[in-house]
Image (cartoon, rainbow over all chains, first blue to last red; front, top):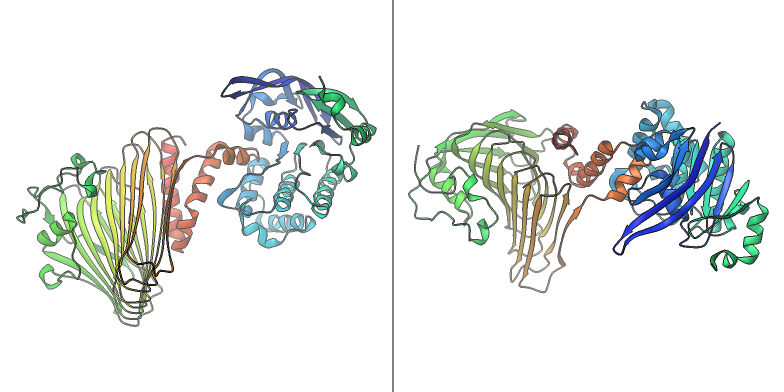
Length: 250
Length: 361
């Protein structure tokens, strides 16, 4: 049983015009097996929340805390957070020229598990995970995210999640840029990992579309750098009908 | 011992060819009054056979087959007494590379090597340089009609070495010359890989990799001369720099003369700055006298380490040091994988890894 606890998190970013506050006190707890949808308009700070928890150097934590199973994530380096069981599926996965997917996956899994996977079982494990995501095996010889289509990038993110077996995964706008088929494959991947493990999910999205495939237990409305309303799945239906206007007119 | 008596003048540093080079650090190799020794310094480490003959002959017996305006080449030709000659027989198809090694000691020295790849031969020649040399060298490379020569020169010098030289290839009809210039060691290395085509259908692929750490000056001055029609050239050099006063220079001159119709050329240089205080000069230069060509282009980029790449790799549990190495290995992979020699590939990457860990990257 794992627990990610975000308490009164305040985050700012340095801009040319000086320090700009983005997160204004976020409180959120995600436990194993739970799926939390974080929904909000563009620019509300949803992605900042994801990247701050993962430790992106661009963001400065000015207050609050983030713990995973009682351990202070904010004190850890980015890779230590991943080793502690955190995974961030990015909206814009980064290209790494000259590094093959297979080399990347093996290096990451070795780092996370603390030992190199056994060659025999590893090849099968990767093949199986790729097949489940409808990915061709030739994929593993390509360079990380280089020349990938939007759908391929997102599938590659979920493939990593499957192989790295995190305790808590943050999916940042995983639905963006996906057509219906790709959205279904990616969502099935998330559901499969959830079914096979006790993964806790923080699903960040602008639209309710992905919630037809990945059912949330909780829905949080995010606006102006904090959670302004929380509820069950029915809250998503309300957003579907009424949009975010009620939350943005401050 | 001999002293140069030709009437050339030592460079002042204002000349275009010398303006980037730290003349004070050349142990006087560019100054006529400096005495040099002429010794045969190569040993054949492997690959010699009846079809790949290595011998030493009197320099006078090997008249240069091209004119050079490089003053180091002029000096070498004038002062060297014995020349090394590697001859690959006509029609030979050699699968094993011919490896010439040398470990030089720190005194001013000149060296001349001639490689002749016979008609329709296929071969790979690897030169391994180590030690703390102070060497001026000329390598003349003859790629005969229909021949394919892979030429690899590894500058794995120790940190005091000085290496100035010209490597000139003459490529005959339908000949293919693939050159890999790998420079990771030395205090000052200044190499001029130059190419002349002597027959149509000739093809030159010039690849380079360099990695400069604090205080190192690594300079590569490429010149490809397209005088013959329907020849093709590709240049791709990649470099990384790390540490204070690490300095690299890449000059890419491609000249397409009148009458060289059907020329196809592209040159590329990319530099990766790993720390502050390093400097990469990159000067591509394309001159075209005929419009009847297939293609001509160049590109040059110099950039910093991409922090987003690091974040991405680290967010997958990969520690920052390993992440940096992955990115750097990836950067060089395009060049090094073309070597098709895993032993050398690993050795070069290990050397770069070692240098990186020394500077704490």
